[in-house]
Image (tube, rainbow, N blue to C red; front, side, top):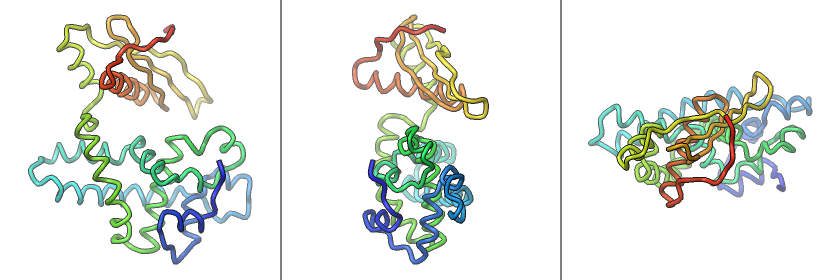
Length: 241
């Protein structure tokens, strides 16, 4: 993948930064800082700020977009819109990975496609845009991404717990309750990657990975639901507990 300078990225996505240093910081992962000591700061503080701004703006948008929905429904939908997977999807829509400043090792290991890094960098970008140009500019950038995302979330019930949705679906059709099995655990202790398989009637229906068993289990249920929607719930895979 050909990397972009912050200036090239800003021009491509139509963002005008008065302080290009803010954008550079937003795109800088700590692995880059470890290898290039001249970089002033990584993006973790901007990530923290962007997370808060996203919560507010998405909450405000949902409040006006769905006047009939109750607080609990709005909370679930907001969680689906600002979760790691959805933010990573937003990042991919603007091809943010091309502009991320990563260390050589992180880049070689697929960091530009990793959901965790993409979502964190997207949050940092939001934080930098807010500091540079204010809430209205962030709102104008974010709103076109939200409408298509909310349509998909509501259509596929992604705001609901995927384990509950899957259980409801299989039991309504006479199947046994889904069971979840740990297939593998990889990575160092502080950076585990769990791989979980969900089975129905003993057959594998979905596989998911994540930094915790909870996240991997949710991902497995989502994978099974996606396969159901595509008409092929069972997967061909040999696995062991």
